Image 1 (cartoon, rainbow, N blue to C red):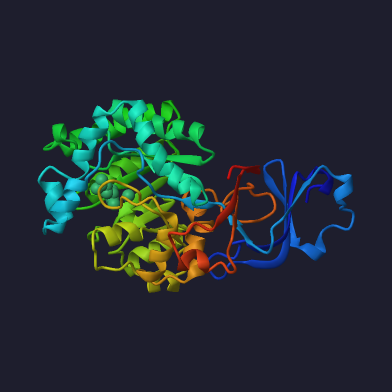
Image 2: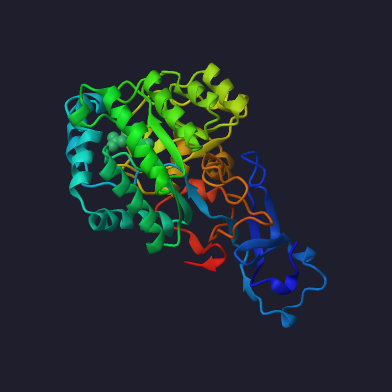
Length: 413
Ligand code: DI6
Ligand code: FE
């Protein structure tokens, strides 16, 4: 515990959803206080337990009356693709006329059409189009966002995407974690040469990304319309050789066993997982992986196969929730809507859903020790909500109850 003389900000008369108890509860502390010092949470507890030696008069601390509102950790969106060129409203129309996502992808649309638009766009243009998307999340209380590459699919453009993702952190007070997703789809120039493309990913793109320190993790889209299990393994091996943690788009449209493979590499997370089976779940549990649920993509593709929530609960695999913000399957930049959909579509409890965008969102990014919880020593990424109970965050959307937001102890909203 830091000396109360060092406190810079002290919230009194607040309720805390600490999210330190995983998804079992909100970790509530009512009639509480919380102190911030040097960007970290320095103290929290019942207001009546504030240190006896603490006196406002002796301190430079700014004391804020929380008026009985709720503090939560800053929200974490642990899976997005929010840097991209163009949009795919035309494919949305095609799907409404009966074409499936796979049919459109196989006919040269889908990811590849966004690749064309992303390659054409300059860094400035990509930054300008990504900024409103990130701003929307930020204004909803998001303080940490993961952003993937994967719409460049050549060295220059993958690097361009990752650089733009990094530049966003200069524009907004949001922590950005970057993931290299070179193995997202086959670019047209490698249409009949998957192995040649993987050579490029593993032997040229990845080393350069590592060299320029542009990624915190490596991801692969392992799917019938993406990469096979064998091909995925090649990319995992390359990631491991560079000591980069692994994430995987797995079991979204079919079960190829990618989650189990990822578990062998001590991956951070397996994401989507509608078709995940119990063997995969057991493997994930054993290696300490997080399951990332993406209800926006499930909804937008009008999928019917639900992720195996009951089995994930039974085996106590932590469940994160994210937007998957992307132009094809989840053009959604609303984390509050994801909370609601995680409950209504996937039947998560509100405390599970909130854990999914706080403590377990952090876990899916390897940030368990610093973010996603209100706990002493954690980053003071904190959101104040004008609500009477935490479940309200899941129950309604469209009205933004965010009253204040702190990133690293600084008030940013
Ligand atoms: N799964 C997804 O949901 C996105 N990527 C992926 O691997 C979709 C990307 C797109 O259609 O643009
Ligand atoms: Fe995705």
